Image (cartoon, rainbow, N blue to C red; front, side, top):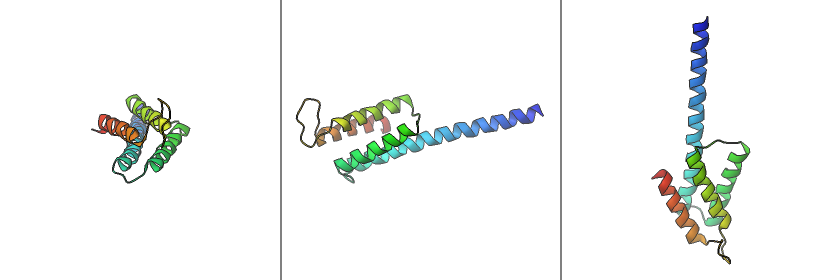
Length: 112
């Protein structure tokens, strides 16, 4: 009986671990699609920021746990989006080209 319990617990553990890994990969894929669409000019800057922020809020509200390195990348994109302005006035505001340059760099760092 104990053997069956251990076997069942092991199977459950493997399934739970697989679900966590799959969820993380799917989350990364969602962000990659948003980033790639912006870089390929399939979405304008306002649509990009809206899609990115919506995904970010969804993950935050679901308490998604991303790889810590990936989370730093997402946080940096978030900050860049937050600093975007169509008409930058101060030193902490960036224009569309600067935002796109940042997204190019970060996409290359993470996705190659």
